[in-house]
View 1 (cartoon, helix red, strand yellow):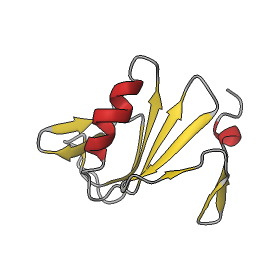
View 2 (cartoon, helix red, strand yellow):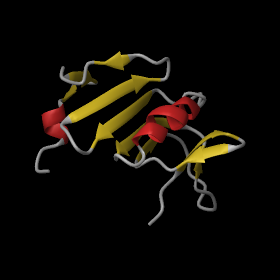
View 3 (spheres, rainbow, N blue to C red):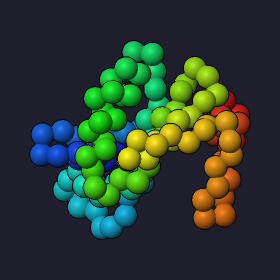
Length: 109
């Protein structure tokens, strides 16, 4: 099964591991022009590209509020706002009454 493509501009679209978006979907298109959050699971072979070129293109998406980079070889997540801010991943995050820690994300893995 193929997922949504996060469309950064007319020339760049990427398929994140997870996309959270709002609004209606077009069953004839995989393009998500309105993603709110994207998750990228980093592997050693793609980490440089995902944290470089892809991250910069994601920041061009007007609707995008959060980029979550998940490291698969350690208990570490990096939350990046589109303005470039980084939240300390070892501190529990709280938003809308929910809490998330790296231990929660990696539970059962």
